Length: 439
Image (cartoon, rainbow, N blue to C red):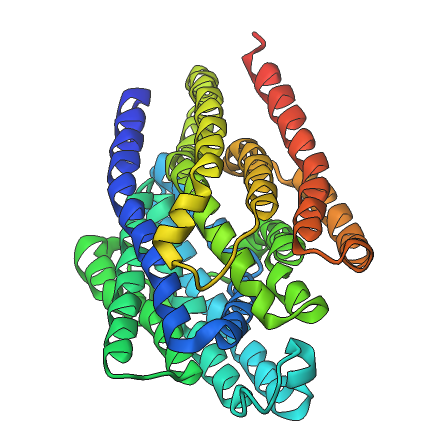
């Protein structure tokens, strides 16, 4: 399908350009959603929702890396012209995800209804009396999204991440419209906010499937007879490495809301999340440019186009200079933006904003190399450092938070824990590229 480095680069540029508009609107949607849900729920209930949403990310990664495995498999098979294997990979992935999600969902139901879930989330039952119902609704919709979002991995494997971004954006916009409608009707229910935000994405993913597999790419349509158990094992083999890396990422970074809620208060989650979502805009822009390099790297590597890989790396180095400049600018104008964005409802300390900016820079630099390593299928170095950091993170975070008693100190722990992996990714990438360029 992609026969030259010129066509590969052209496709990459088109996807980056389209993704800028799409993810730019996604960023606007996220920013609009923050004050809207804050007005509907108040600081405490909003903090509970943010904590629940961070826990749902754990479920999103329980696909044992099959989504990432499908992405690499599709890119490789298309590059080699093995279209029948693409259909087998798609069919096998959907089958495996369905097999995985059922027991996970049943286990979550058991935990929600049989254990002290209020203690786990540090939530006051007098304020949120229906937490178990809320969580049941959340995990039910999130489980359906767990399977359906693999359509996006398929598009990413075709080097069309902009299509994946578009579907995600439509789901976010749908959730925003429903949330705004609830606000206009005077709804102040955490249950409604959770239901809307977890229901909208799977509805849009489900709506995209007929167009994708019945019209646009009917040759790759999943079917029972194309399920290949041997291929399922191959996808799982590489997928497990992606899975472990993703799970470590969840423990290292996505548990922050839960730790803040546990050690401080659900109300303290809100200022952290506001600072994070504000600074995270830079990472959204950064990843919009970088993500297309993942599958393009797989395609280039499959074709032996090492020079393209080297030139792409030089472009990404320039991008990191832009990331640093953008972060500095956001720090300087943060107080003005916060006041314009959320008014005086929540106070965001400057040191919290600075710490989040440092974290985002370290994360961006690490991802700048890991996206390429993922495309090359080189995961061992990431696996080693991710597991090591995960083992150290929770005890260090607990000790530091108890000692300094600030959310900012927790963010600096995240920076510290992520730094060795960033250095390792950088070293491994340069070693691989230098090796490939040798005659």
